[in-house]
Amino acid sequence: KPLGDEDFSIYSEVLGLELQVNQGKLEFFDPKLGKKLLNFQELDMAYQEAEQALQQTEQALQKAISHLLGLGLSVEQIAEALSLSVEDINHRLQE
Image (cartoon, rainbow, N blue to C red; front, side):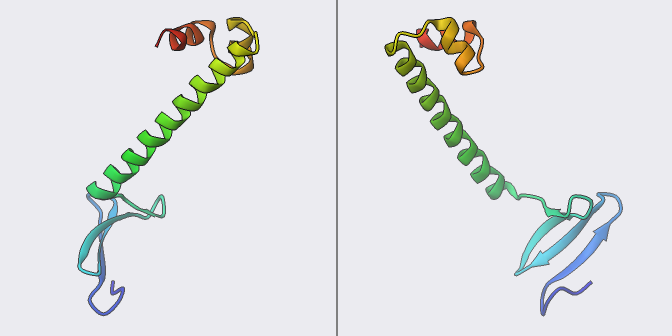
């Protein structure tokens, strides 16, 4: 089906996806999800962003553990406050 002047779309029953050409680029669209599938570059960027967010979360958690220890809380209290296991807190303290 036409999308624009040079853009078009065709449904693949084998893939269960719409193959779309938008601005000269081939894209895959999942009509069941109502979303365009990410291409390699978009997937790599999303992975890098998620990795960065994970690192920031880990740093914040380390900082919170150190701060709570400095306030005199026990490892057990910190684990309870942060909804983590005592083993997880001890592991993070050894890093």
